[in-house]
Length: 415
Image 1: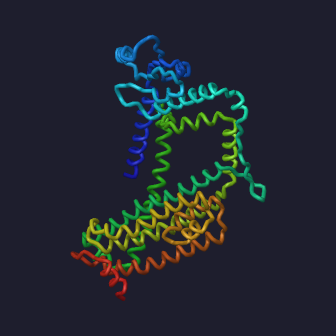
Image 2 (image 1 turned 45 degrees about the vertical axis):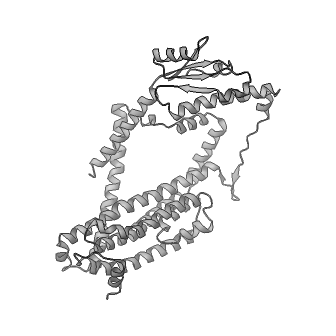
Image 3 (image 1 turned 90 degrees about the horizontal axis):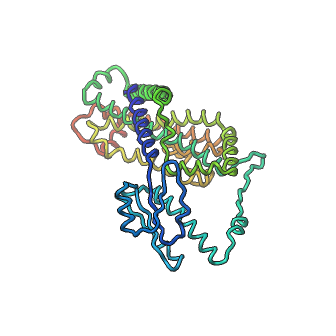
């Protein structure tokens, strides 16, 4: 599966990209019956959408024409003595439900035209309105002279969020692997042979470290093999993954045509090189390893306490909840105030610090805070290993009894 998984993932991405490309290349013809005479002239044909203006026909006749010619749909604007009431007289007819992007695009064009028409009827000069519009872009700069921007904050959040989410997924995937491995050895009774040669804490640490190294190796293989497969897929089969676009991406591309937005992107590129990349790399490795070891010891203890995976459910919630809390704290507080009280406190709590601190570091965290958080994390790991080893020592030889929190507490006190 180490080698097959990247193949499956790249194949899925390729299929989605291909299907999305087919969907984007689909040509549609939309008929326009505008009895008001206000908006029929605003629709311009695009590469994949053709607008066909119908004149001098009734609504029923227009429907028949659309059905006969198998057009995508009919946009109907009924006549009105009051042009301000046209907004209530717009309907779209089609055999199949149109996509949200198509309806939104039609609404946006009609709204713009009707708004301009109403302003003109009120005697407002549209050219003066356009000339009076101002765009304010506050230049941000630190006291040391380093320039930043709003895009810079999103860039930092992206780096921190990616690091935190990667750790979150790694813990979930490989923590469960450690737990299942312990349960498998326990149920097969092979653990009774192994425990006669090594101490329980040595066995637990060997399992944690061994599975961690295997996971890191597997993850590295996925990255390398996935990158190679994407390159081969693009070069040989000609499937461009850039075709996998959403309406929001198209809006971003349109925005890039604006010189002011292009300037912001240049600032963001400069901000990338201003990121503390060395600090990010080192902190990522240290917090990644520390956080994974901490949670792995808890997973190993849970695996030793139960006889099957079904019994683990009652013990998984206390382990998963801090991880979920860390992700939500990182997303909803770090971007708003990375140096605030909430962000700072949770970056020192060992069960949440690996994720929250990784999200804070791109925004500039003093080295002493990073070191203190790491020391607390490693100290908590040492303490967790100590009491997890107590559970492990007793639990791996317990069979046929579903453990409770009270029972596990007795195991920890057992010396």
